Image: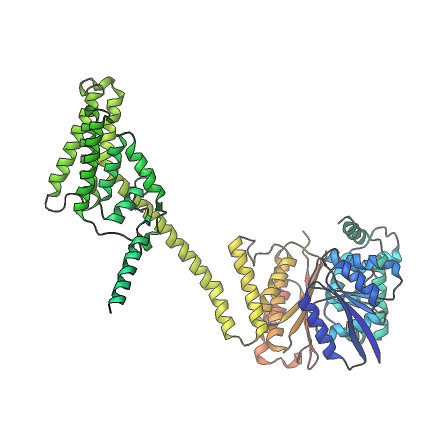
Length: 218
Length: 404
């Protein structure tokens, strides 16, 4: 049985306490999730993650002192094997995309059930991407329309299959349900989603660059 | 019990002493209500106090000084209701006090004349005549049992007052140039106009005051009606719903929606429920249904466009599908996905609830066919309902965009 060490970065103490307690209540399944640290703002987050070196960080998109993306950037040179999962209420697409482009492995909304959150933490820990319906919608929006002259066709466009998978995620299907529906394995679905994540992080598509630039100016 | 009696007496005295300096300015006012306030406090006719102050002003400004002192020693007027409720200290009206004030004023005037602080008989005598005339006319106009009491008929009092006023004004005019040469004398005209104004002032003032009061009353009533209508339609309804609800989540969502509405109403935000775009309209729809049906709706919207006929049809169909899912699927979460591109609008409503066999639609769900499928088909679109018992239901709506 693996133990997943988690840090909660979130400025609402009540929400942190709730997540911590609910995650603890769920333990006893395939893995154990232990909350090893908490932080309420950007600087504290960087410090706590450096000192505890957790497996997964649940990272709020908006934090006092800077967005979740600045936390990831601050830790880029630390060579720690920590994965980030963005978590927030319902933020603007550009904020969420900025955190994912900074390196988060996925994005879930706070309305998520604790079982789904646990599942998402395990998935991110295993190196997979976690797309909530909302993130799938954001990505479809960001990649909408064909570029007349894509700088890098491999990165700047989603394949038909990837779009199909994203639409099903946006409609509320789980990876397993999508696999059944498309007569594919769950592993194949996961690899499609990871591919989308890679494109999201690396593509220089016009909108994505614009968003990233906007973030840097701010 | 002699001790107790003496205690009571002390208390009584103490209360009188404490109460003495509190004079509230009156709402019955000519300038600041100061004279009215002091008159009410000591049971004197306000007109007598006003006239006395006006006359004493001729004596080296004594009246004006007294007025200032009285103003500084008084409090802001209590609100109208509080005064009439009897919270303010006031003595009953007693004409003997009026005469006392009049006599004291006369005594001061005589003393001033002897001391030489006197503008001259030819000014003061007519001024006194005008003052007494005004006192009689104003208290006649203001109250039935004013200065002279009921024993003197009203007509006689009015006549006497007017006669005194005319005599005073005429002789003042005579002193400043003579009634005979009125044509050239601006000051005489001014004095005559002032004299006429003195007749009319109380009645005119009362009419204006009444009009003002009536208008502000009407505005207040309309405002109260408007507010109570709104509160009845919104806040009261929500409070009733919250009381009937046992589920804290539902209470919270009702309270949240009501708060949003109330804020929008109070602070003039854009009216809820009047969205301009497809995206905004879906947000409004899901917020409303979340509150009404105690359910979480996860809406993902890709692309956007201004509200047009096609998007209105889509929203109406989505609403039906959502309400159906909320009522029958036995779930606490519904997913909505809407995508708007150049060629069509697509909408999905999905739940993972109990589902049903579309071949055997229960009789109470025939509505689905008319309200979703029929509505969309009439607009040239398609609606497909896919459901399996035990795994849930998904409604797929496709509406072509009409090319302009």
